[in-house]
Length: 334
Image 1: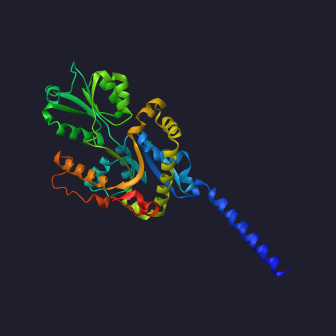
Image 2: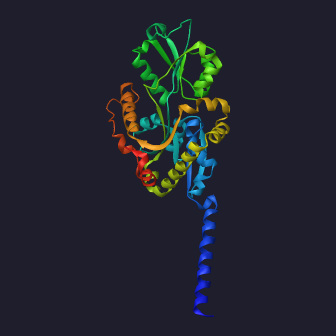
Image 3: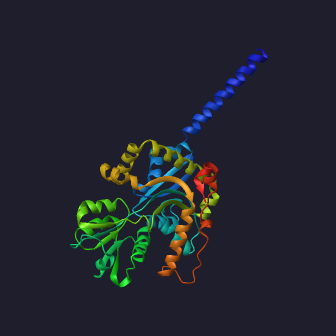
């Protein structure tokens, strides 16, 4: 056998080894991949995460994702702090409050933003006059410990409505539309889709819908314990890369995304399509997140959610941007 032929055989064998190795890597079992235990909220704002799961983007990035579903971000946070999860989706308020209480958490990315209104039952009025409406003590249902509660506080502050003029009722989001429709509460402050479900039940003509875009917009984020994030940066990079692919899919395939989220949330596709424009689905990190969390921390001190001597941290230090900076520098606007 001549030298040239031997070299060709050797190159062919090496090429075959590379191809077989690549195929094996592509098809390796989930148990052979690093596993991320992810808690996600069963709401439309987690579309980037859900699409990444359904379209196999996490697996393509070489990680396995073990998913647990929750009805609220604060419940996912409890599981994270208890040690049963690695990363969670939630609004920013629960993370703010946990940080003030000494929990060591990192935010690794924002995945969506949306605002919601205050919905109040009419009693013969044709226009909303805050002082006249709240001359009678009102019952307002909201989700305590999350963005809706912070929004509610801002609403009352904006319209100069004293605490003696209302009673806050803590209620599960799914129960609010029925409570408003049957008159057990006078108003609700909650995120979609429960806002739209409430309007469907009671009728738009029977309520005041006071939009709150100038008061507060909830920011959905991905968070984890500082110890986990610091020790698993490569896995975090892969996780965020999958979300980046998901964002591209969502932009190009809105109808397919709505179908995926309709099956996930059990919401009627038409309802979901109607509320879809209210969500800004984007992977990033922004200065707005820092200022929002800082404002929430001051509010938490003012209303006694934390001790008066609690020091408000620099929330820039709660944001761990290195993984996102590496895969998408333009997405980081801090």
